[in-house]
Length: 184
Image 1 (cartoon, rainbow, N blue to C red):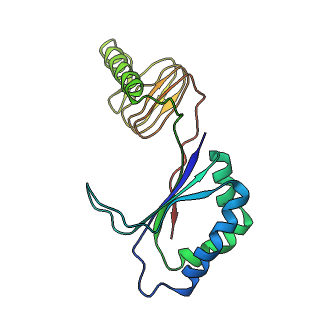
Image 2 (tube, one colour):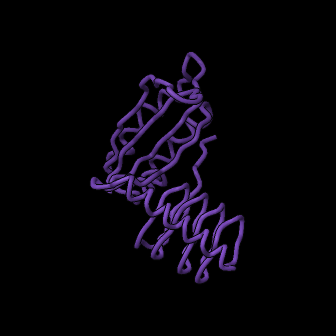
């Protein structure tokens, strides 16, 4: 499944430092062996909600594994300081959704998990941070977990799947939650 490396970079001081320009000139060559390609790079953003200072970069990869391998590659690690010495920002790697993804199914799974959590709390189930825990599940941030799965940040979990950040998983294996990699 397609995965993405996203960067929210602070506004660059003008003129742009020569090291940053060297980084931009060299990054494409580090991505190509991993199937990476720019989807957004240097385009002006239109802020329609909130505040968005800086630039957005979106790079697509064939999979999360390929994106991680690129980020950890010796070629990319060699040029990374050329950017991070001069631009602060946040960088994340995230898996995309399948072509047949249906947001209403995610909402339904989250609703069902919330209803089960409310029922378990009313029936005397263990509660942490206002969430019901059944069958040995662990919970952080107010989510319901069943069957030993763990959820964080309000995620709904069913059939052993684990998700962070408010998503829902059904039937999947628990995935480790990886924090955003801050480029500083």
